[in-house]
Amino acid sequence: VMLLGDSGVGKTCFLIRFKDGAFLSGAFIATVGIDFRNKVVTVDGMRVKLQIWDTAGQERFRSVTHAYYRDAQALLLLYDITSKSSFDSIRAWLTEIHEYAQRDVVIMLLGNKADMSSERVIRSEDGETLAREYGVPFLETSAKTGMNVELAFLAIAKELKYRAGQQANEPSFQIRDYVESQKKRSSCCSFM
Image 1 (tube, rainbow, N blue to C red):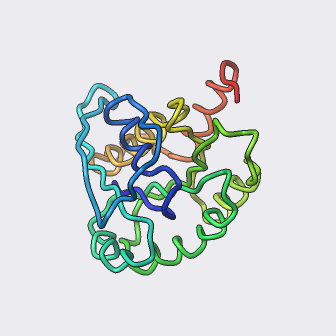
Image 2: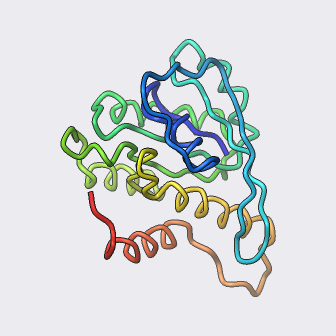
């Protein structure tokens, strides 16, 4: 699983929130090149090991990250809801993904920093529209509060598990439908 997106969208904090359940606040040093962490999750009673690659968002490291695209089974593409430029870059990221990644790679679009609603410049509807256009699931997330962080990774893990062990008589798993159903389930109790 690779985390992609412009520098400063919160990829490293997103990973640390999922891996360690913590939020690192304060000034952050940008990721140089690429880093990874492992986490084992349980999906439908089966343990699944996720190897999560945190990439540098800066343009100068793009050639390094391109080399890792082809081995990725899933890509979490993040933008910052308080940064129009990070959202505007999503199409370019998707073009790169289609150029370098496997054709059947699982992609999920994430609008991060949803806890900063007072500074929001990208509406949730805009993220949903873009995700629909590319046929990928969409979630708004917050590495700070943990909102939807686990859901994003579990949805990816469920999809990868389904693909790895798909039986002919097994009903198909639809990641977009799963994400939507989980969002509806949690919206009764969530706030921003």
